[in-house]
Image (cartoon, rainbow, N blue to C red; front, side, top):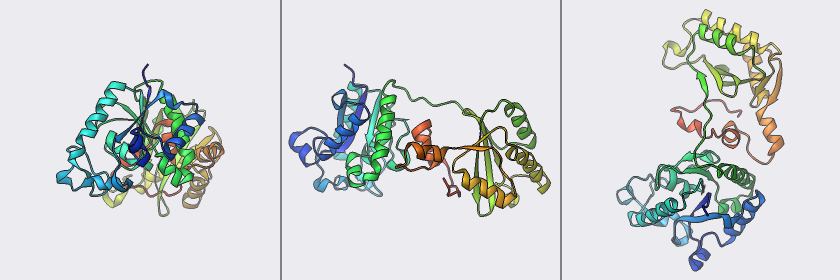
Length: 338
């Protein structure tokens, strides 16, 4: 019978090395209990490691060196540390296991597993979001999350691991990575803004609003009248003269007049992410008195998962499979409330 779930760890610990079986020590016991808590059974999953060996001192860096001697085509596992080329056979063995098992989802536990599957190592940034594997064996659906050993060292990570395992259970029902198609209007003209709201606001049941800020300025504001359609309206643009997106003060004022009418109207009701920040900022910076703010994703998530983090990236990975989008940008944002 096909194992729909492939659980991938880093390497053997001392106890695993003695028994030559993955996840049999304290981390393995915790993993078994974590799987059971979300309705999964260890016996129904295939368990393996990137490296079927015990690194000296349990330190993956002991198997690494400089880039010239590293495995070809793979980035550093840690800054300046590349897996030594002699361990290419371990990656070949892993590829054979993946092709033989052909799972619907690979749960990549920790940085090394994430590195082996997709060539990334920032587990806290990529956890929870399904991506396709680009290394070792291509085209497998991968869901990264924290390694049980990391959770045992930092217990606050436990609810996040459980959230991700619950998602992995759902994802194990099909092999492909499913993303929602979305239509996003960017770099609009005044006419585009007026057309967007004229077309989509009358049928909107809940209007999502989010701002980005720098200092005392709103650098851009986004509106989503539905889960699949949005418009992003910029005000700052470093590519243009004096950094202004709009060609004149009058044009920018016309845009804000339109947005003010929408924001200060109680209908449709509005949704924010940490709306206390956005609403207060809009009032302080522009005198906009937002009306009809009825929903807040941060507060709703807190009611469901009070132990976990509440930033928008975490929520996107957990509920919408849209995590790690901030890693795609060339520049970091300036808003610190989410």
